[in-house]
Length: 117
Image (cartoon, rainbow, N blue to C red; front, side):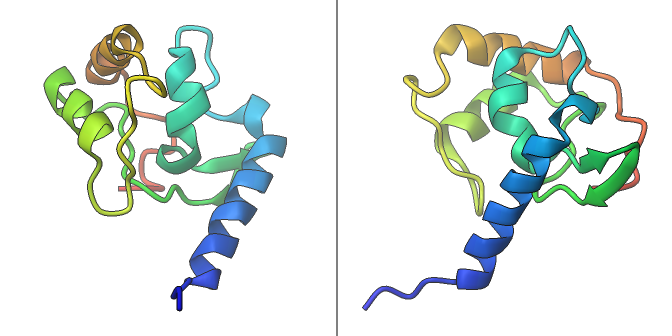
């Protein structure tokens, strides 16, 4: 029999649903943010913001402003760790992963950096 943690599944679905309505206000919604970050990473690595207020903390650690080496980002995306899934080359193409890794390393800390460690 499959053991499913319904609270975790429900919380994830709720967060995804809420974040859709607040997308335009996400701190990562700037024009220079790689599409792959906006489409894939923000769900877990950005707080959900609505009308300028944080309504849900991020599930994963804040990535922006930490000068994470691109090689580490590439490894984590391909292999995953803990709650973070691994993403295949079909999901995150190598060229986009390179842009993502470089962007994360050079990114500035979000204004609400104290929200998620």
